[in-house]
Image (cartoon, rainbow, N blue to C red):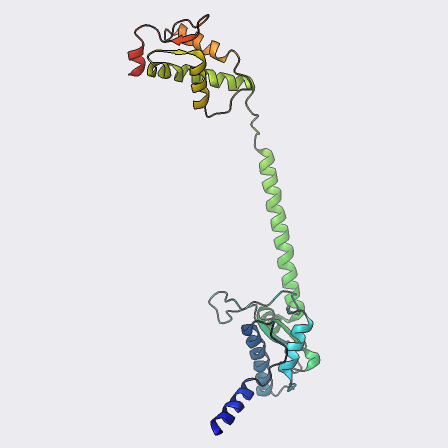
Length: 250
C-alpha cells in the first residue's frame, strides 16, 4: 500500500505544471516548452526577478494562441539539431522577456525561436530586426542580380537555327553512300531497291528530311560515278560493280 502511494506521488510530481488538453502536440515539443518555462523561472529566481508561478501554463497558452508559431518570426518550431555549437536547436521554443529590465510575467513574456532570443538578448529587438531586414534585402538583390546576369548571358548566346530540309536530305544521302555498299555486299552484291531502302531507313537514327524523294537517285548516282555500283536507272535492283564485292567486304 505504501509503495502504491509513493508511486502515485511520483506520478503527480511528474505531471506538475503540465497543462491539460495537449494530446495533439509532439511529446518532445511539450517537453521543450516545459523545460524552457522552467529554465526561465530558475533564471528569474537566481537573479531576483519577478516571475509568475504559473509561467509553464502561460507558455502553453501563448504557444496555442499564436498557432504554435514563433511570436517574432511567425515560423514553426523545430527541434532538429543544427551545427555543432552550444545551441544545437536554434528553432526550439524559448521564453523571451519583451522588456529586459523586467521579469517573467504574463504581460512581459513571449515564446520565440531560441535563435531569435539569443539575438534579441544581445542586440535588442530593433537591432535584430534591422539585421534581418538587411539580410533579406541583400539576398533579394543578390538573387535578382544573378537572375539578370543569367538572362543576359542566355540572350548573348548565338541561337543555332535548325537544319533545313535540304541539309537533312544531304546528310541522308551521305549516309546512303557510306552504308549501302556494305549492305549490298552482305547480300551477295545485289538487292531489290525497296528492301534495301527499308533497311537503310531503319538504320538511320538521325533527323530525317520531310521527303526522301530523289535522295536515293542522288546517292546511287554518286556511287556509280565512283565506280562502286552499276547504273540503277531503269532497274529494280541495286548492284555492286563487278569485282567490287570482295573489296567492300574487306
